[in-house]
Image 1 (cartoon, each protein chain N blue to C red):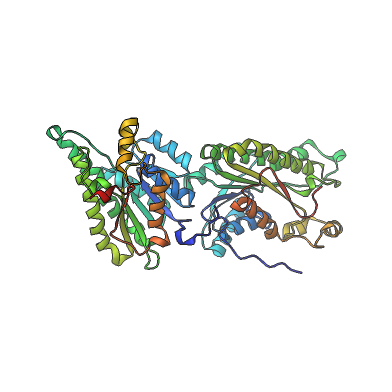
Image 2: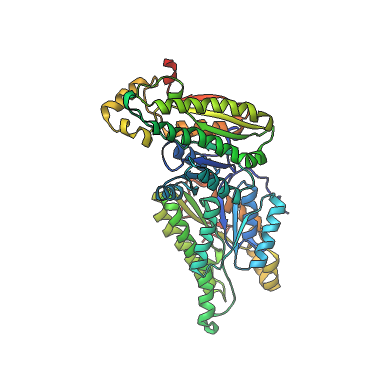
Length: 257
Length: 257
């Protein structure tokens, strides 16, 4: 593909994708690498992380972002090499499903730490590098990965997850408002069903898979390009005048209300 | 009739590009400069460490971006591996490798020592093999990448005193063709340029006026090439415009056998 589309170009940008070794994070990291960006990916599991980084062509940084130490390790590793950060993709997250009567308290603690607190503190700690990239013509970009489960009530019993992802969406708007004057945009992508480990239990079962596909107005599971395309749009010149938006990339699921 | 230096077209936007022997006055430096101008993230190496620093400074002042500069003697496998490790540590991937390192000399075979023969072969042919092998080991798992080798028309033509250099350059051509067949199924392209006469201050210093006049007379344009004119062809082979070319040795110019 010839790189004539400067409107959507992210070539030469420096990008961090958390949870970039698999699933949606990997789709986004791979899209940015193919588009010519320098990409750092973080994950907790070193072997999987190193394999993904070598395969995709990313720089690997091992970090558990639910902890202050993990956040610090990632920020320090990137700061050691880069004088600016153009795009931060807060993707790392977890889910938890259990019946209402048995829903465990530690699920709330875990999901709050990784899905909400991790996003907030990583963004906070990366602000100096984001500010170094930011200009009114070409803002620095923060892209948070929310979920369609944070927009409409899901069928599955993942109470802490849906609540945490709704929290990510609101935090996106709050940070967008606060950081707009500094030329840092903050937007969220709310994915529907994609091929990820989080979805593997459902998509691996043919009956359940076709049931899920049946709920998607566009009639299919999301593909890697669907996710990479949305992230690249938000990170490129094309997405420069957008902040505080929550974009469903869900095949139309959120139109059910 | 002086040709005009071309404007950049973003042909290598975001491509991490490694150029060996890039610190001299010839094709290597011209290639690193043209690649940087075309949007590549450039990694330069050279055996000569002080000159490497000067080349990095020169590129920084021309393109505004400081290249990663790693000393490397391509006759040392460990130094080649260290060069690739340094590039991967900095950028996570290598999209393009330009094998420019080579060493010439003049000696008729009857007077040639084993050492003269081996030194020329080790730098010119074995060095290209080592860097190509290191590149493939990184590129094959990623299923993408481009290698451009610097051969020479002397690999085709007869010239006294050049048995070692001509054999090495003919070897580079054969290496290019064979490796291209191995790499193609992995989405990797391997090509070579064969410059005829690219003039630069060092060459002018080591070549007699008579030989230079004789070589110039063989040129279709009646003059030597500027190093950047050869670099332009390397940029083309490295770019997506050459997506259907592999295993080719492109004469620069007019001396294909």
